[in-house]
Amino acid sequence: MRNEDILAEALALGEEGDWEGMIRRLDEALGLSPQDPEVLAWLGVAEWELGNLGAAYDRFKEALSLELDDPFLLASAGNTLAHFDDPAAEGALRTATLLAPDFPLARCLYGAYLAREGLLDEALAELQAALELDPQDPEALYEMGVARALRGEWEEAAEHFAKAAVLDPEDEGWVRVVLGLVEVELRRMEEGAQDLLQGARLRPRDTEAQLLAALGAGAVGWEDLAWEMLERGRQEVEGVHVDLLESVEESLEEGAEAAGVVLVQEVLPRVLRERLMVRR
Image (cartoon, rainbow, N blue to C red):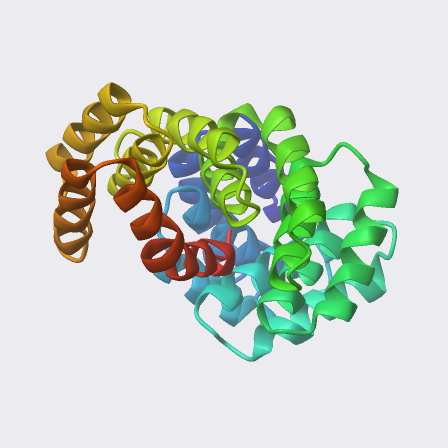
């Protein structure tokens, strides 16, 4: 069978979500052509989808060394390299946008990278271009929210996060938590508590989200919900979250005012920044 036919079969498996099957077929293609950058990059895509970030990084890194020129694969490679703080990420993402300026994903991922590197004006330009190409793209809306938040433009950030949450049911939990934190930053405490609660319920294994929801509910006097979320967080708590658990519990025992102080003054500045900086 020709290498092109094997690659086509592998991509068909990927479209079906059979990432392991895709990898097996791509390994066959790689055996026929060990220096094929496209095959290596698609292996990176499949490894990423399986959560094997280290293997994805290695595949993408090798593909980039062989003059990869597909915009989608370049954008995927750059996004993966960015997770490892590899400086080559910027070149891959920028090249993807130059090769395909009308490709929303490339503009979005490059903008997301620039925002987290602190180049906010440049990031906004890329993200605006992505949204002009696809106004209903939840990822571009979310990343625009991140860029706005990093500039301290909280109202605009909240608007973009709210739109992204509605348009992306699969990732709504994460976005709702971030939106809730931004609403707390805006001192919209009830709205923030509602979104923190909704986000936490959509992310039951996210210990920090449960504890944030407990604080949010406690701060607005929803005592039963606050204690419920605290217990949900307690079930999964480990490592650094132990101290947060103790702080949340103590504040809930003291009442709404104490919970609000802990949330706004002690927890919010650190957690919001950390969540905004997470590369997706």
